[in-house]
Image (cartoon, rainbow, N blue to C red; front, side, top):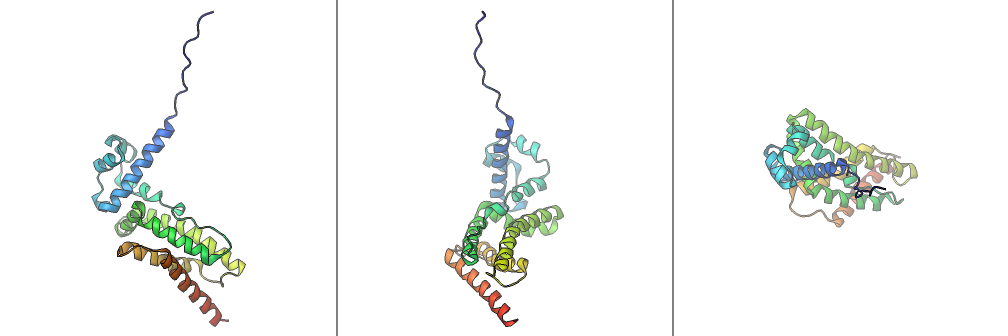
Length: 203
C-alpha cells in the first residue's frame, strides 16, 4: 500500500480576511473623516491607517462618496443600545449616556462632520438620514412601548426622540466638556417632566 501524503489543511475562506480588511478600512475612513472632514479624506492615508495596500481601497471603493457612505452606514442603532427594563426613565438615562459615548467616538464625530457636508451631496444625505433613522427607530419603539404600558402619556414618538437626543449632539459637537451620566439624568428628567406636565394640562 502506498504511503499517504501529508494531510493538507482545508483552504481558508477568503471571506474572513476580506471582512477584516473591510472593517479596518471603514474604521480608518471614519477616523480620518472625524479628524479632517470629508473633504480631506485621502485614499493613501486610509490605506496607511488601515495597514492595507492602497489598491485594496481603490478596488473595493472606486467611488469616494461610496467609501464615505459605507463608513458612516456602519454606525447605526447598535452604536447605542436601548434596553427595556420596564423603567423608561432609567432606560433613557442609560441610552443617552451610551449615545454620548458613541457620538464622541471616531465614527460618531464623522457622522457630525457628514451632516454639514451632506447638504450638498444627495447620496450622502440619504446615508446620513438612514443612519439617524435607524438609531431613532429603536428609541421610537421603546417610547411607544412606554406609552402602551402607561409609563408615558400619549405623545409624538419622533418628536420626543429628537428632544432627547438633540442635547447629546450639541454637547459632543461643542466639545467644551464631556456629556456625563448626570447630564443624561437631567436631560431625561426635564424632557419627560415636560411631556407629563403637558399631558396633565390637556386633560
